[in-house]
Length: 226
Image 1 (cartoon, rainbow, N blue to C red):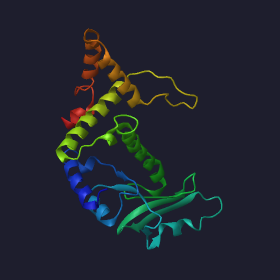
Image 2: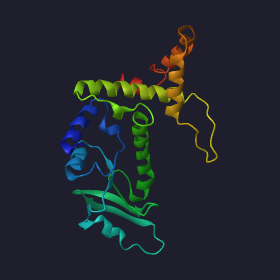
Image 3: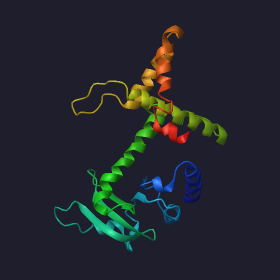
Image 4: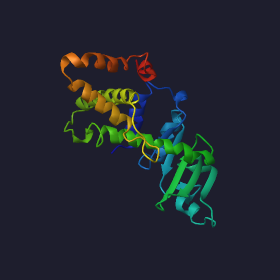
């Protein structure tokens, strides 16, 4: 629900903490596209790796045109140094297992490396799920005041990091496909709730151990922010 100007304004706040030279690339889905947005990132010195729509112009042709003439057996196309949103980029185009066109453009890496790197964007979906339906139920808030929402997001950020730190310490069985039966965030949240639910005399030692995980010596994240 944001436009390029709003996102660039928010980015300025983020760059009070982060440094452009420390950002290898900024990943984005199809909602975060457009020449104003890309130009703004480039002006800030931030490389981008974004999924683009099949109607987006690539060297003057819609993206779908580059995929329409795939040779038999070919899984996709690799395009280096083509123009996307007025800037030189490398592009990879292919089809998902559902038959949907997948086009990703980047000025941070060569085309043959883009898809493997772009998969890292899935981590943000895991964050959204943890903050909302599978965790803290953020979408159920009725807050509308900016300051209140800002404080709520700050608290949730700390809670999310805390759950991860606690969850990483928990042992969990693996399913037959090799994945955890429970996510790290679920394990951490469950242990924190369990610790707080204990009688006051019993919860002290465990809670102090969990609180110690938030100290700068335990997490580089908080050390950097602090």
